[in-house]
Amino acid sequence: MAFTINDLQDLTRLLHERPEWLGEVRRVVLTEELLSLPEIVRGLAEAQRRTEERIDQLAEAQRRTEERLNELVRTVERLVVSVHTLQNQMSEVRGKVLEMDYRDKAASYFGSWTRKPRAVSINELWDVLEERLSQDEMDRLTRLDLLIAGQMHPKWGSGDIWLAVEVSGVIDKHDIERAVERAGLLRKAGFRAVPVVAGHSMADEALAYEIAAQGVAALLNGSRIGWERALADTLQNTQS
Image (cartoon, rainbow, N blue to C red; front, side):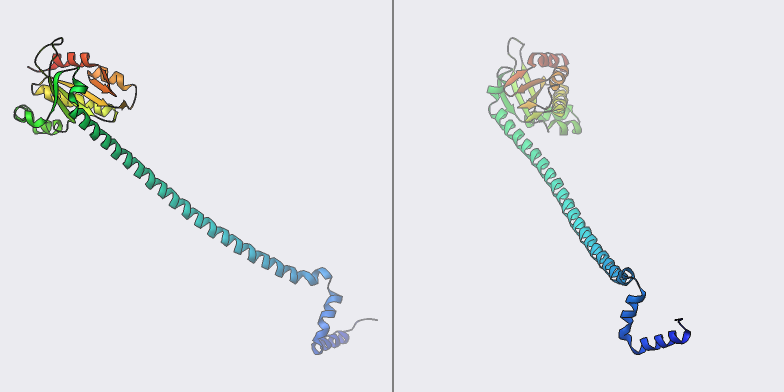
């Protein structure tokens, strides 16, 4: 039986009048897959929404993790600075304690190099130094860690001898340079001054060669190194 326009119009009118028939018509006209498509789309939309929520949660978690890591890095950096500062402070403290020990026990530490060694202040030489050195040279010399006065042992000569001592827990190249410079200033002012470095250890074993090359005597954890060579250089270079 052919389907006419009037039949279609009648069907349309009936569906408007009886909307509950629409579902049955859809099941007849559409396949099951097409009918389930809206539900699938809704499911996909919901899945996408949950995925986006999860991505947002992961992004927030990553942000918090990065913040914690950054704070941890800053904390570690502050800790490194604090430890470095503490190490420097402890090194300074050890150096000061050593200075006091060398000053108080000058005879014990330096008695094999000089007779009657004693720690003296730059002030005792001030008038002579002021006449013979510039103000800048005076300023540098007054930063000398320790000045020891003594007399030459007869086997090496006679007269007064001075030790320009730079003290450090760990002796480095700068200690050697300062000892040489400050002994040189004393020599310029007319004093027979031997550059000396004193401490527990050396920062680098190669510094032993530097000490020898510079004509410096070393008091290293109780061991005495390079005195005769340093004294010979001093006697040769002291201004009369």
